[in-house]
Length: 190
Length: 251
Image (tube, rainbow over all chains, first blue to last red; front, side, top):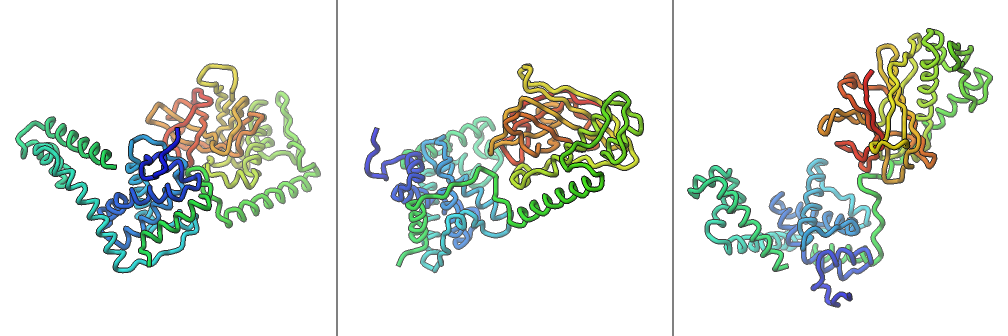
């Protein structure tokens, strides 16, 4: 079965499979599709746009090196890419410096960041943030309150249960259903 | 003028177009040049020591140590010091045989090739070194067998003691040869969550399927009741991999 010529219609797995075959366009589509997710994650974790940009470069260099080993487990490769980002961030924290092994391996040149770039990092992170907020707002009231209390306010299930006047089991179920609904809507959009 | 992320996309795009370099297998790094240099120096020292021993005893470098392995035999003058001690102490034929085995295996471990020295599977258990003046005693001889119960592979594990220190030697046959992606490891275990990695087997098993290794046991070794030889695909395993051989462990 032949793939559509427009790489934008390809799935993440198809794009990642094409990357080792020297398909530059496939990489470009994959990069633009997942850049906001990666930058948003790194900004949330570090709160520093300069550091986030530097780490994002290492994440995509690692993605390039690891593309061959990708095994599609979900419709979207976003969990995998965020996993790569988490590993890069963890390694950087352990070593107390931004990891650059993948970039050195690929022979990438350092890129200067200016103020406009830092603004772009913030904008990317905000776009990702607003996307999640939008998804959260679309949830039914009971699920939205439960997800917000659990994920944003980091309350325990017993606290959520007492606030929402329900059993702990129901609170867990509402959080779980809310997250599942957000996940499926996110995948539909991608 | 391009921004940071466009420039990054350009650079990564160029790499994609030119072909991504093959990544080495997970968890494996190229040995640092200083490690390679040290390995080469170690090999030279080992060869020099072997030559010195051979010249001192008037024997060929490759000739086996003159150990008498007959019943109640004695090691000849100038022979293997470990064997001489054990035989001289009158510990019997099997202990003499074990001592020969321990020493030859120790040499085999040290004199591994640079490729093997740079294996990612580091952490081989400490080599048994001869303790002058203290006899080697064979404590137990334990058979190891395949989990499926077949005749091959099979192995014998010998528990030995010298000067209060316990060690083991393992000789196995019929094992699958190691590939670049795996290595054999020796574990002690009491069950799924109670296991201890003794170390990786170096040199690797070749196509003849033979494995020989030896090492010192940790002080708490005898609280474990089972010994495993496993095939590992990770450099830092937290639990035993595919079990190739297993058997009881006691003294």
